Image (cartoon, rainbow, N blue to C red; front, side, top):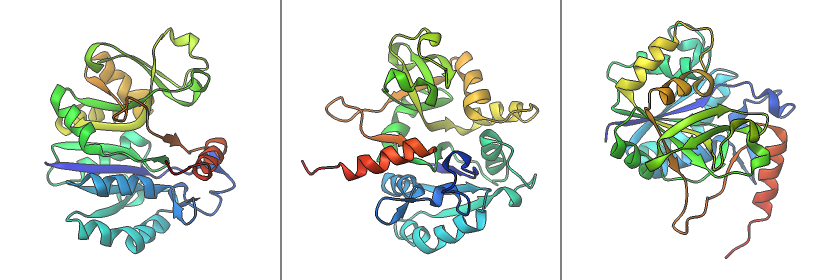
Length: 267
């Protein structure tokens, strides 16, 4: 399978201050001895079949050193590799947003992968991406969004989707103030995990390059949804339950995830 993982790890992490005052967000400690980014890297490693490119910007050298010390060897041992790409080393010398970071990473490749999986470096969860990728290939559209059920009171934290038959995303609201304003009765929240057919994705990214904002959730994804090019992958386990997933990009969710970790009990 011609596939690549692109991990967005360049944000300043201002919502996690003061933890990120002298530390890039992906490397903020989580649990007994790891860092937040370890969850995403482990998922890539265990899902097999693709190299990983970590897109960095804020304190990029720290992330690069971390990858070199802790993660490059495990990837090589598994037959793949993980490498960093800093915004300052890109053609523009900076990443101007999540969509721009992915565009520059892909535009700089001599040969594009058939499929790209775009991931965040500040989520705590375990997931085998192969099921997500297989679902994406089954419907043949441009994009697949990993989706979860959520508490309605938390709608302001997520991109909220209305999903129709067979998973087609019909509407999308980026972090609405309340769920009521969306008018969606059975919403799903975007996990910030995307699978794209690369050649189709590049058309949207190239169009976005001429715009003032270069964000996936605000700019690129709504356009794809309008074109009926996006399906949602409802992330559930074999019992139909939503497995644990948490965006730990702010202090309250980071604290809650730490408390959840302490509360884990053996079954």
